[in-house]
Length: 315
Image (cartoon, rainbow, N blue to C red; front, side, top):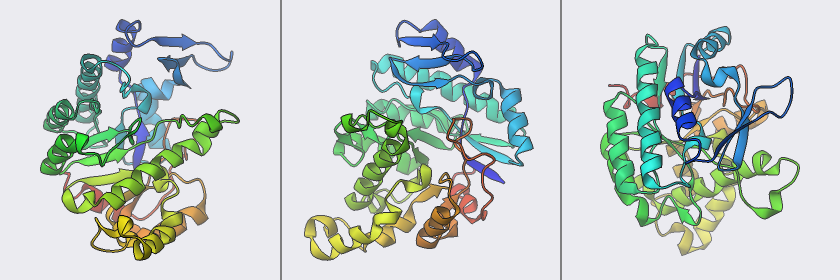
């Protein structure tokens, strides 16, 4: 069984955070006696720094107990550091990517990894992506945009051009929604996270970027957010409005099948619906381990998605 959505923080990254704690406003807070410290960067999205996040022996043991034979490991979104100056984000990216490359080489084929890049500067992001893939990483995990800037904006073109040349996997993972209406009852996470994915995925689909960059393998977290469920509405808009159809060569429901999606949905009916809409070869097993809302152990599904996603990325 594979796990395409799992996170880890190598020791080198943790040491970098400690060495740069003032520059990135890193804080370790004790919230409950029976829990590990919570790590917060720049007063955003604190999370419990569980042993499974930072101890590779604990991480590996948990994967083995769950029956996971191969993990695609990603950096955590809290450490994208898009809010900081380019030199900080670039330095963190290089430290993270190099340490994950080392982890992969030590894994005896049980791990692959994605890197992180300084998305705030697309030219530098392209350079760091190239470095990461030269280190053996399969691509990068990136956020769904930055503020008002969408990934389909021409601003990001240099990065996507390089990703297309490299035939990279781009795992689009949301950050917490900052919609002020959601500041209660954990809604920034519960519905804000899939909403951010929905906005990004819809924009990418309608922009025609799949045709422009056919070699990029885009993987959406959490089953693609709300997009698969509402694809009929997009198809109807495609029929009625040129603003919807102008960049597309087929209805949106056909483009839906050209992305990949993880299985982190926590509901069998939802997962069955996703598979029925996009096909077995476009859904990969994932867990979001070891965050609190992980599906653990990851649900076993067909290997067809894993095979189709990795076939061009394996070197």
